[in-house]
Length: 220
Image: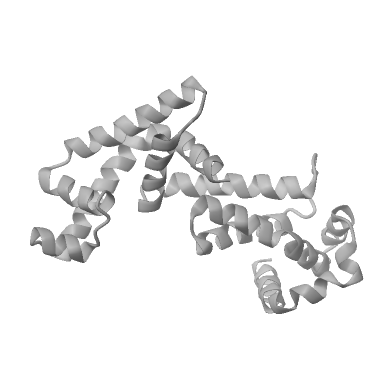
């Protein structure tokens, strides 16, 4: 099965340059329901058409949420692999488009939860807190609590670690610039950042799900 999927993926990638031609074929105009039935019978071309039909819009949704093209492509690929693997078990209550978009959103949430202390997501979280105009009192309280949690964690860090972290995250200096500024090695800078992010991630664990959802729907 894995080999089959890999071969199918390679075939799809090799056909990207002829996407416009596929649009003109009769098969491309077949409904999703009909294509799903054909796919359930193992028809690879039906899967190819569905892949072409929805890949771009799913990729855009994932890229907005994850702020990275490679990560977005991986998420969308996983969604389509899952679709192929479950082709004989699918029992959709809604449209295929809704199913695929929901799958992408959940995978994005899972990805964000696992990578919550990456620089991009922490910066984005801060922006969400600062720019939030939500009228929901509970959400605003959660956002404020998250902001205070991060600030308290940073305040408890050893002096040098705290300085390195602030220069990296608040001043946006590179490791080399921090190294020169503090007269320490780049490796020492990396260690301070690594330990700082570990501390923040640990304190944010109770909030990871709500952070992931807020980040995702703020972007999408």
